[in-house]
Image 1: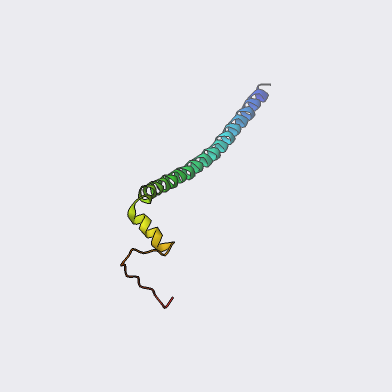
Image 2: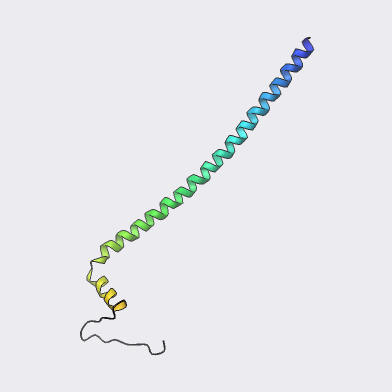
Length: 91
């Protein structure tokens, strides 16, 4: 009788240890996934911040005379009076 109780206790203890080990391993996998997601989102935030800075600098330059002249030259083919324009014929 005592032997059965001892075997039952050992089996129960082994089952508990196996269960706790399984839980720890599965939680570690979940934590690793969360860490990877956190790193991914941190990179997205960094990219968005850099994009925001570029857009802010673009916003500041949109009203400047240099920007307007540049757009008029590139998109509209307009030039200032008495400005020499060289056309590359090889293109």
